[in-house]
Image (cartoon, rainbow over all chains, first blue to last red; front, side, top):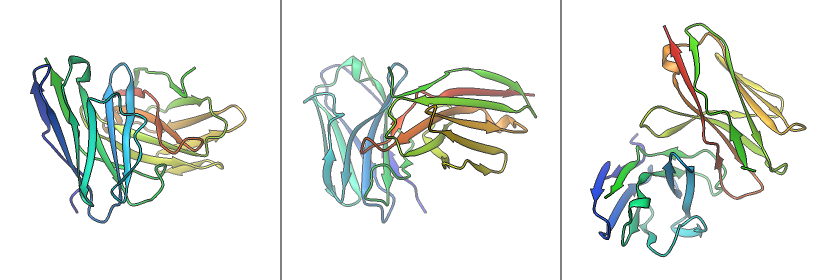
Length: 115
Length: 109
């Protein structure tokens, strides 16, 4: 079975540009998580959805970040405008549980560099 | 104080060695505990859950000490392929997983 799919795998952009990261869940999973990983702050939860509904977005840094789940298997994370401090690896994870604390399966990540 | 604290390492050990990592947590209400493994430039993957009575999976043994609020991971007979960063993860008290910064292990021939 295919795992979580993320695209693009690498993104280099200039400050001020819009960035859109994409994620496809594992078939049959109903929870979706967006994480950001940096050397300084480690792995941080940005937002999670359960059955397409955003449950907890308290980790979203600021209004420049937005996430959507237009259908049960797909999500986007958008940064507009991007800033150099947004440079990080962004992981998407999915789960077949309604609880955010059960096992999560991570995608390969998108390495974002904002110049 | 950080919610989850780990020694960043690196732990440099020869093949065949036994190595142990500890992780301390601050929230006594935490109920679920896990070890995830992350290879260089890869995604985290679940290694094992940690149960109150301790549990073993092949060469890996996980222990939980609630009184002292720490969990541990013991790796016996280290392999080169065990080289990775090991993330301590907990849940409960928050409706989300909290990840430690990780302990880096390097196994050399």
